[in-house]
Image 1 (cartoon, each protein chain N blue to C red):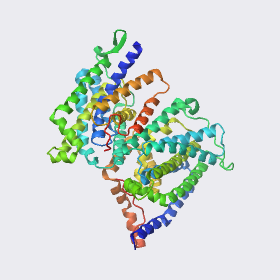
Image 2: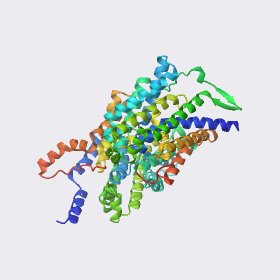
Image 3: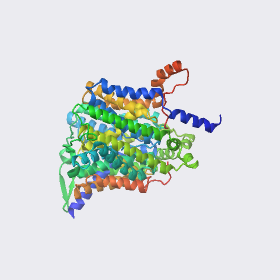
Length: 342
Length: 289
């Protein structure tokens, strides 16, 4: 087998749906029916998962380090809030898409700033953009409600049929549907030739350019797409909680997001989903132990993860599942091990 | 006219303070290429040490300042030897995650030990109030900051330019491999510089309690300011960050005075524009590291 067909074979094999993935989504769906009292936290996890998937698209696949991803989340959140508050677009799904597009426009505009320069400049520019938007939102408090946030948002029924109930049941299934649809899209994107070219850029931009990949155009495209995803996540936040306040832009949100992605693992789409679940569980655990100081333990988790090494950690976690798969199926494990991003 | 001069004076004091706070970061970030977002935590540690010594144990303010330096430097060298040095060769992402983790830990730890409210350091009477020079109001405390920071800056420049250690550091930064080939103990030089930078941050933290305000969220609130100083100032010398801090200080004070509604907007915009225009900083080298 020649090298090129080998690469193609592997790429195709990875792109195929596995039983494990179907099982994963069935379990998520089942959770919706099994724990009817926990809709609020589960919705929160789904939202976070979507937001993390957005960061994974640029960090895990394209290697763009961002400290200000909350900027797009915030724009989406405020866009959805304003649309609903002033009754411009009452239908939630349509408003969701419009909010996502608003974030996408911002993502496209700022992508030109972000693709310039090295890691450090990118960190600073992304962080600066998020802070700038926070300052703007505070400045124009007549539109955004300032520190009080947007209040009195009332969501209309989804498609004019399904109203949001106070237990969050509709919100949960709505979020799940949105997450699943966007996951399918992301899955399609990352397994396409476009997605493979992103990985090439991440591994070595110079070489990628040398084999004819338009590096800057690809980075702009994925950054814009990621901004769309983050905007949708922000809009979901507003629609399911009916609030939007200044903290949607907060630095802590971007920093937590990094942690979520790192817990789950970068460079494969399930990383964000798993990370979101683990992160929220950890957060719940820590805040029951020490309500005020849970941030300390979150910080400790980050430090330990980095010191142990992310790859090593994932190898440990996946050791048992891989062993089982090897024994049962008699072939190499299919559980994706996240790539390094050194 | 006098209002402008007073503002200018305050801005210079603020900028000098920022320089002392951030110049340690200029070394780690600019020279050693290590993204240390936890730099503010060392400053906070110095500030709190000074606060405890002065307010609780009755030390004189000027005796507590050197101790703020020493304690932050000690924490710095302990962390450098145990944790930081493993991360010099890692990716920027790892460094960012690690130092954000440290920052979160320091915020929560200080909150736990000292409470979350803002603390003040009791100043000696000689440093309070202000006096007039030709109608320009000069705050005594700010004048002291300018004197201390000015002397420090000159001292640093002399050390870097004239001493053997300074030339070793410059050699180690320019080309670590060649430097170690010449018998310079590069890790030791870096460790010492790191500790010294942390100490300066601690001193800055102690001095800034009066002006910037000291509370457990200090490292998060001022992280962006330190980063601006370093990225805008570049890393080829300490003159770059020094000028950048003065610019930032004067700009911030003037911005808050003349266009209070725009708030930090001016600064962030300036930073983004400068970074886009010159990714290596205003006074930086042109070659990317």
